[in-house]
Each structure stands twice: as structure tokens, then as C-alpha cells.
Amino acid sequence: MSLLLASAMGTLSALAEAPPPTVCNPKPAEGDLILPMPGDAEMVFRRVRVPGSGFWGDQSRIIQIGDAGGGIFEGLQRTQISGSFPVEKEDAWEVMVAKYELTRGQYVAVMGMDALMAASGDPEDQKLPTLEGRVLRDAFMRPLTFVSHQEVLEFIRRYNQWLFDPAHPERLTAMPRVDGAPGFLRLPAEDEWEYCARGGTSAVQAGTFNDRIPFSAEEINEYAWHLGNAKHQIRPVGLRKADAHGIHDIIGNAQEMTSGLFRPEIWQGKPGGVAVRGGSVSTPPGDLRSSLRAELDVYAWNADEKKVEERRSFNSGARLAIGANVVVNTAQRARIEKEYEDYKALLRRSMPVGRTLDNLVAQASVQLGSVDPILDRLMKENETLREPLKAVQATLDKAREQLDLAQRENARSLAQDATRNGVNLSAYLSRLERLAETLKTAKDLAAVSTRYQEQLAAVEKSVHELEIALNEQLQGYTDKIGTLGEYEQTYIEHAFQQLEGKEMTRRERLVLELVKLHAASFAEKRRTDGETWLTEYRQKFTGFSDL
View 1 (cartoon, rainbow, N blue to C red):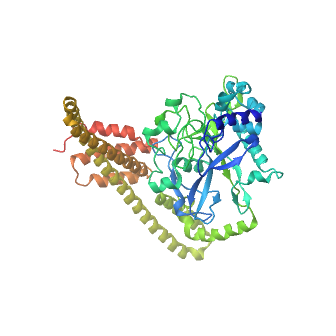
View 2: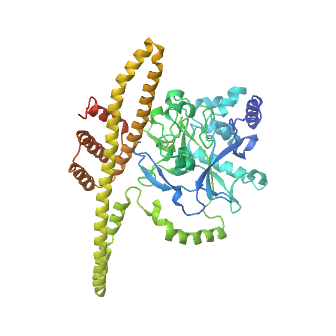
View 3: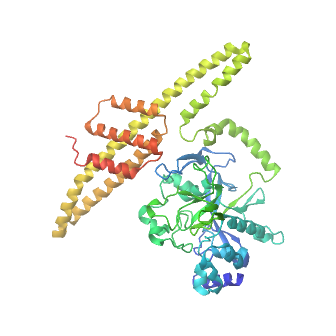
């Protein structure tokens, strides 16, 4: 069956200019890292940089994943991203992920056609041996879906075995290494996947890392296959544009398996099936986002037949990554241990693993509270230490008071900032409402005479600029509400009491009503809803006048 794959690859190569694209790399690009596969197939990877040279951590690696406005399983999380391979002579590491989703052709190259036909739940795959030419090529370029999670893992195991065959050391020529030890193929971790999907360090530097999708909404059809343009039909890899790192289809087409079990909050909660990321050809375009995650029920209960089945999902596939062991030899372990002492003393306390994910001050208060029973026990067991321990207790009580004040002040500041965003938002809505009439008049005049085209263009430009400013204020507003909602209710109520006690304009009073309403909504649902909140602002301020 490798002859079939080679024939399909040759067909595509003959149609392209050098360097020729192939079934496995339809969009060759500078920087491609290519690993061989059986039958002249190949697996292509892209490098995504992670800043900092240290093994344990770096402040520049702290990122925020999730989406406060996303689904219930996409809560905001602060984490530290880490690369698997250090970059020689540079202050950076690298995450290495496949340029394309794993395809049927690549599966056949390693496992054989018979294995695909046995593993696949797709009736179309049973026709593959009868196909040829362009039709076969397109079939081989479709992402591998309709197979179980176990079949994907078995493919990875067999491909690793083929690469590591000691009789063929040349197969590992391009494989990245750590201290001479070659990496290996695996599924990406969830944080690796989302870091790459959001655009990595370059997106962090550009200020776009926290955007919902790594491209503008207007360009979504150019970068992603979704329900709107694919209608539940998985498409061949590489037909959409690559992202900034040269990765194709990471958003849309097939949702992609990751290496971890699905937990409600990524790192915590009940372990379930396998986490899949990125959405698919069944996802509405408005729902696509970098934070989108779902559970693949690896073992699914068939209620009709009263039996458990291995799930074979028509829109679930995989994208491989190259990983490495944490410890590859004793010398490297010694360096890690030495570096840890400095990390523990200087950096760890400021990293997400050493702090809460949401409210650092609140977490400190909880930790202080856990000390009380320990001190009580020590005083009972050691009468001679009672007085010194009482002094410690008094110091802790003062620290708690300071933390309480800090939480009150932080909550008040967030509520004030959200109100300021809301006031700006309402003002832009009022201006847009007035401009709508001006725009209508300008269009009517332009329809009568071309000499009014310049005036029309100026009005349209003003409308466009106001809409951009409005969206920026809405994003700031939802971010503030989401952060405020993480505080205890007593602090939120105190914050609003403080604001209500100040002299305010009529507009500010109306905005504060909405801020309170939306903070309560977030506290109940644990998610922001910018679209609904904007609608409520429109309703509140339609026809509003400051006079």
C-alpha cells in the first residue's frame, strides 16, 4: 500500500513548482522541520518559541489561557508555558507541533491500508483501495478522523518505533535533542496547544495573545474550516492560510486530541475523557476561539444497545508534537537540581504554581487562616512557647487586616475602572446613535450628487473609528467585570457602596446600575457575556441625553 501513497505524492509533486509540495506537506515553507516516514511520506513540524533560558521558569513565560466569555469549561487560568527543547546559544526554548493535522495518508504510511480500514468508522475509508490519482491524493490529505483515541496512540507508538530503529540512525537526523538524547512523538499538552493556537511569544509582544482568535473575525474563512463554510465535511489539510508560525488548521477542520484527560478547569476537577481543542467543521464560526475545549468520551455508553464502545468521532482528529523527557541523564539532572535552588528562592513564589490562579490576595488570606489551628495545637503541646506563639498570632492577625484592606481596595478599584469603561461605552453608543442619522443624510445626498462622496466617506470613517473604540471599551469592561467577580461578595458589595456614596452624573448612575447587574450575572454564571451586556447598554442609553 506504500506504492499507493507514493503514487499519490508523485501526482501532487508533478503539478507544482520546486520546491514541490507533497501529500504530507502541501504548503512547504522556510523553517519546516521534516521527519521521515515509511514509503517516502513525511511529518512536518513548526517551532514556536518560549522566552527565557531557565529550565524551571521565567516571568516572561507566564500566560493567561481560557476565556471569561467562553464556555463553562474555559475559565481563565494563569500558567507558565514551557518548551521541550532549549534553543542553542539563545535565551529561549521551543515547543514543536505538527504543521498539519495527522492525515489518513500518514496513518497508512506507518500502519498500512488494512489497519486503517479496520480502525476507521468512516464508510468512505473502505473505498480507499479502489481510488487513484487526484481522488486518492485528496483522500490521503484529509485529517485522520473516525478512529479511536487508542488507535491514534498506537499509531504514535509504531511511528516512534520506526524512527528509533537502531539499524536506521539516519531517520533521527532532524529530530531535536536534549543533551544528545533525541525527542519523541506524542500528543500536545493543552497549555502547549493553546499557546501555539494563540500565536506564542510574538502574539504576547504584539498584545494580541488574549484575542479570542489569532486572526480577525473578517478573515475567518481564510484561516479556518467551520460549520459555515465546510458544512460538517472534513477538508484536506493545508487549504486554509497558515498562522503566524506556519501552522495550518489549528482552528477548525478537525478538533484535535491532546495528551491530557479532560478536567472542567484544565488543571482541576473530575478527570474524564480526553480533551479535544480547536473546534471543527461542525462549530459555528462565531463559536470558534483559541480557548475552545471539549471532552471526547473515549469510552462511550451506547444507551440503545446497552454497551460501552470506543468512540470514533467523525470530526475528532489529532496533531502531533515532539516532546522530550524531563530528565535525560544524571548530568542534566544535577544542573536542574542546582538551578532549582535559585528558582525556589527568587522566582517560584511569583509563578502561577506558587500562587492562586485568580485572586492572589484572597489566596494569601486563606493560607494565613490555615495557620491558626497549627498555632493552637503548638500552644497546647508546648506551654513554654505560648507567649512567643501569641506574638506570632498577633502578627498574623495584623497581616490579615492588611490583606482584608487590600482586597477591599482592589475590588473598589476594579468596580471604578469598570464603571469608567461603561461610561465611555455609553458615550460612544450615544455618539454612534447621532452619527447614524448623519450617515443616513450623507448617503441620501451622495445618491443625488457625487460631490457629497467625500462627506459620506468622512462620516463612514468616523463611524468605523467609533466602533473600534467601542469594542476596546467593551473588552476592558468585560475583563474588569470578570476579575471583580472573583472577589468575595462582601468585597464587591463594599466596592459598590463606596462608589454610590460619591457625587455622580445621571449617566454614571445608570452605568453603575449596569455594572452591578453584570457583576451579579458573572458571580452566578462564572462567565462574561459581552454581547448581551452591550445590548443592555444600547437599551439603557438609546435616546439618552446628558442635558
